[in-house]
Image (cartoon, rainbow, N blue to C red; front, side, top):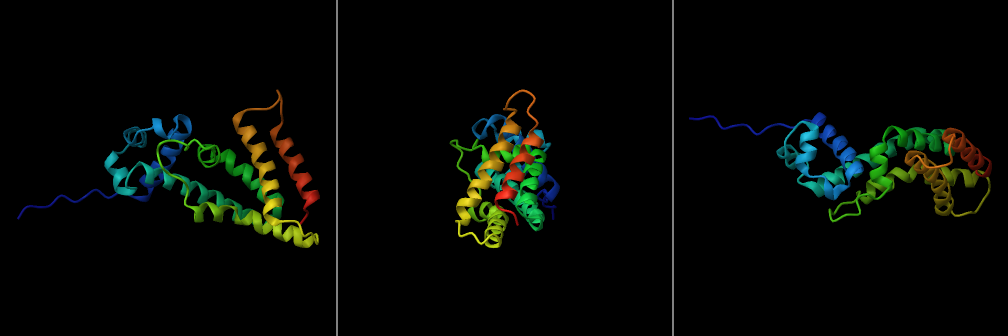
Length: 193
């Protein structure tokens, strides 16, 4: 009796490499221009591995977005005990360390013919620490301001500064760390917790 060939086994290291490679290529070229064979070649594997691990391009892109939001959410949850300031510092640090993921999550390069978006529960869970910190800060201040509105205002300020920094925008000689500290100080004064 002949031996049947065993299907290849794809491990978590390959899965991680494919997610990171996909994020880098899509952030650089956009999802419509990146083919699975390009991703496989850059990751040192085959398209069969991608199909086996993810199912296809839309599922791979969704997995990349979900992975990015999970990683971001973990960094936010770890910083949550430090309140709004800690969340703000963690936001910038994570973005600087994960530029490709950040670009995919927030710069909308996925607005393309390739259908995919982050799983709503995964993306929503990543922002929960901000809502909780804003709620605690407003309660401590005796404020009846809307948690979602204040969270959106804080997120917009932090996100805007980080996005400008990553884009290399700004006036010549802009000290982004100092600008970010100035913003966090203003947020802390307004919503100290």
